[in-house]
Amino acid sequence: MKNIIETPFGKTVLNVFGDGPPILVVHGGPGFFHNYLVDGLLPLAEKRSLIFYDQPTFENTPLPKKEFSPQTIFAHFRWLANELSQTDPLGIIAHSWGGLVVIAGLTEPSLQTKPLPNLSRVLLLNTMPLTSKELIQSRKNLMDRLSWLSKIKLVLLICTFASGQKIMKQLLPYYVYDQSCIPKDEFKFSKKTYLKILQQLKSYDFEKDLGALPELDLLLSEKDFITSSHLQSLIEIAENQFTIKKSVHFPMWENPKDFDDFIKSVFT
Image 1 (tube, rainbow, N blue to C red):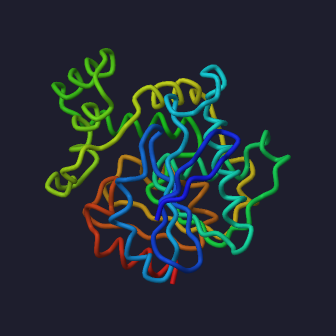
Image 2: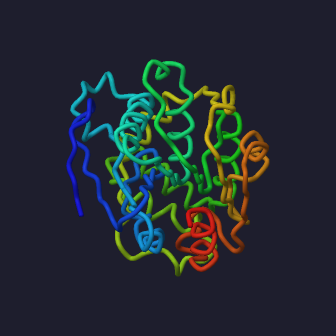
């Protein structure tokens, strides 16, 4: 079921599956869209209401372009989580960049005039590091895995008018343990959003106020370029931590059984 709601950032489409206590799914990126997460999380819809949405992008937000920033995405998440937790406590599942959106949305000082959402559990999947220093290290890990030919192709794609889909087609083989698990559908990606957001996140640190977070669970992947050494501040406060074997960055594709077992253990 699809619902359209008005937000301070424009209309947002909610794609809702199932019935029961609500879980908001926060996708990766910046610049991704929610579709790649749906199939892997649908088993939760047997007992939960799964709510997927697309974060604002550089192209689709009605705000003036000069006002679009990481804070736009963080504030949009906080507003949406508040709206969806008015009746029942809201669970959160966030992947990759989505983990940073959640942490920043809950702790960013500029947002503290807004009420905190009523959250139950927060599950972060292969979350993006909370400081720019660790992000640089993890991105170096990824780039070290690329062949020289892939690096040259990637630079050419970024510097030209190539679509986000073409860029992700070049990168996805390095994001998975076994390429055969990559879905055949095109991976939607807003290149403009990715470049603009990362340009503004050259120096950031969201480790300062983690004590305000609700109960937190972490899922890591055995072969991810984002390693446990990049996430020590979260590991120290997490209630539970689980590692998916034979997986890089998309465990819902790569090891669906172990992934399914873990998310059900967290939310059932």
